[in-house]
Picture 1 (cartoon, rainbow, N blue to C red):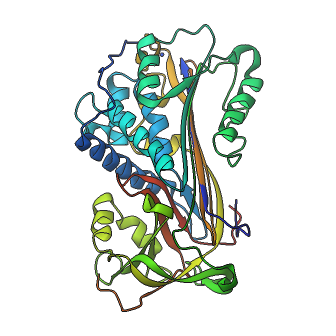
Picture 2 (cartoon, rainbow, N blue to C red; picture 1 turned 120 degrees about the vertical axis):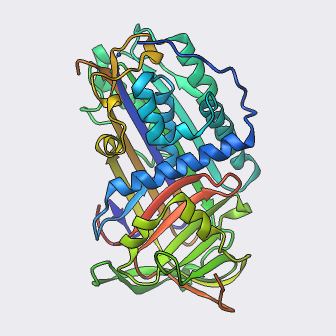
Picture 3 (cartoon, one colour; picture 1 turned 90 degrees about the vertical axis):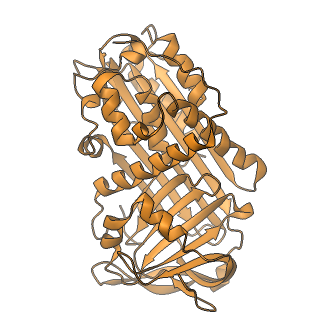
Length: 426
């Protein structure tokens, strides 16, 4: 569901979960420390970004659909799952997630370094950025100590044994409560009764929460109802915030695959930024979505000016989204992981686990104060049986656009979305 938001402040969050069921082969722990060479972290960030655009292309939002998710949350939850995969299952997952672009043995250490890097943002800045990972194995089900050590060290994951066989409903509620607690109560009921059953052997969850004020806040007195043109040419009234930003970055890109304007607004202290990509015409958003890649985004970012004055008009909005990711991941080549032929023997030493479901839920609120966002991803494992700027450029987002929230030092895309119909309930 998406609705125009009235409260002040910008908030974002996301949750991802992977449900695993039971499959055999030990894994090796690299023993690498979190002091991963920067090149590996850069490659992981690029891999996560490439996966973000691949996955976005599979979500296929319609003309009046909004979209919002956390690529970082999904990559992390699936990264913990991939760490226990072997053979073709591991290969397919690595190719889908672009982990195959990293040097052998460097993916988990790079995640470890990146997670600590992102966790340090909150300590040094005026924003809230919280990351949390957890594993929920069936009591008495033997998970290899090597795997537990790997996810604890590499992903700072909390491991909590539970009893799905006797109390799957209570366990589901317990995991959902953990998600709520780690997303400031923004992500609720992540797991449904069909996601967690007596057959579930393991659930892996990632949660991310962000809340930050703009470096320059909008004045609510300048927020006015204005027309917003949808992809189909119809219009609706939205609350459009307005301010002449002194420290914005702007690019007018008349050439390239899609003529567009690009805006970067920093959050307090500049550790994170909000990037909006606004096609010149209201109907050009699908063309932008089709053409956008990590390379294209890097090219566009290189066109941004140094901070200067930009006349900014931006909608005030709120989005709530939920995605089942099995079909999109299969379409990207991650097939074996959901099939009885799956090989997650790196988790339990046996080939009796497969992924039962991958669910992602996200929330974002953008208003005069800033942004709040959250997301969570869960993976459940089941038994196999189962340019040149104007002197004062104007950025007027009164038609559909893409937006990204990213960490500025590493370039990590934490959240990615599109606003196509501000008053739509999706």
